[in-house]
Image (cartoon, rainbow, N blue to C red; front, top):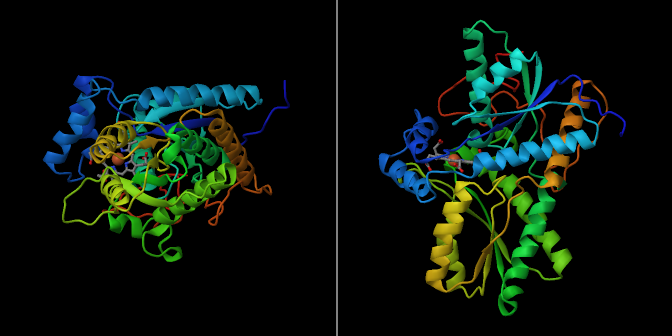
Length: 375
Ligand SMILES: CC1=C(CCC(=O)O)c2cc3nc(cc4[nH]c(cc5[nH]c(cc1n2)c(C)c5CCC(=O)O)c(CCC(=O)O)c4C)C(CCC(=O)O)=C3C
Ligand SMILES: [Fe+2]
């Protein structure tokens, strides 16, 4: 057995994810959970429901989280990190509140949260923290004493998140016909969000247009493109593009959309495109529908060869990165010196989201940050 690793003061890790439907009857209630109070047009909801029905009403995200749970438990066990791992979702079973209730029953008092979202922004960070606050409030209303919760820092630039994506792009390039391979363009994709959310993502004073959300993705895209160039000897042109836009058409969101980008690249003479979904942690519905179905159909219509590279999913290097982040944060909480592991221009981000970080449309309590109403 290796020497035991120390996660003190934490006594549990909580994998916090989006959740997804597991059958046709789940789809509409799931979408109701996701969109409660968000003002998403009915037409968009019907359309998104169809994306799920196309796959039997099943999102792959829950199985992907089960695989990640297994990978985390295996990694922790193999490295002597004695920290139980729980799983709860924001929008589908196992629901966050139920998992937190179970954690309290198991005597967990100091919980570290791993969200399956690697970047800043309201949708990718604060919304998770708001849902945590809501669940803690629900426990309190039941007469339970909520545990203290902290959230791991954004891990977009951790090598354990980057390396599997670099391999994925190299594999996708290798899978292209040889005559178009070296000329292939790289389209790094992430979820589009409203411009207003992008501009205010992360501490507002530090970032310009597009905020931390766009800056962080550009950092990752550059790191992956540089690594691909170093390892293949070929310099592939690249661009950060967006997908999965929703909301009312008159509200500006980040652009260009991947499908428009494919058209534009094709017209500009690109012989092939590798789509690399750097904005996502696993190959969930956004990847399976928006890229593998919709964007692929667009590419076929254009006669443009495309490949879609893998997300990190349950890669053992990602599990190892989570262990590293847990130990880093635990050491920080013990007031020990640590050198956080991060690549790129931005470096390691804050451990504690500051007051006003990625603000919501309407003020709402958020846990696991400097403005948390909980300890
Ligand atoms: C930044 C971001 C991530 C990445 C970070 C993260 O992973 O958290 C993400 C992930 C996901 N988004 C998902 C699903 C949905 N997102 C929606 C709506 C929205 N997402 C937004 C942003 C993001 N979303 C936004 C600004 C909206 C508009 C309305 C709102 O502000 O809420 C809607 C409603 C219909 C629609 O508008 O499309 C659905 C169904 C699933 C599950 C997939 C599955 O089932 O496999 C996952 C992983
Ligand atoms: Fe979403």
